[in-house]
Amino acid sequence: MSRCRHFTFVLLIASAAVGGCSTPPKQPIQRRGDVVAQGSGQLSFRSPGPGLVSLFDVNTNSVVQSTGVEAGSVVSVNPQAGNVTVTDATRSGTQIVHTGVSTKHRYELWFIPRTYTPQDAATTQPLRY
Image 1: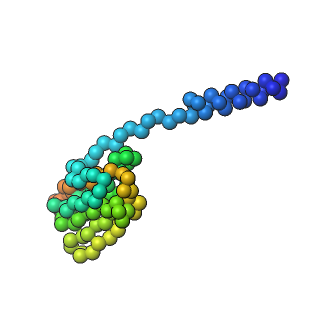
Image 2: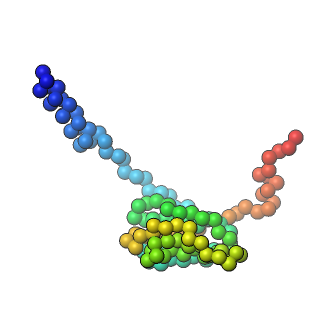
Image 3: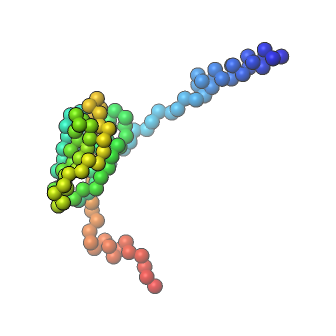
């Protein structure tokens, strides 16, 4: 009886390892915004206006970093240095906003312009009674 139990346990573990624990394939991420730069080398983008810039890793099918930008800001991806920097035109400074960029991966920069205007503020404010 002990052998039968042991055999059943081993069979159960083996069947779970073979088929029961597999994960379904990842669904591709839908692109949001315009692709403004792509490749496996150094990339850069100067924002024409305020908005959101996202770095998409094609190899891992994932957005690895997103940052808000103002008009004239430059987002640079430097795989050799392994980082993403943002140079803000209004503040005259450069910041490293992400590290871990691989020279072996292919990337895309996506840009979504901000469409919010000051006139929208009235519609987004809470009502006061």
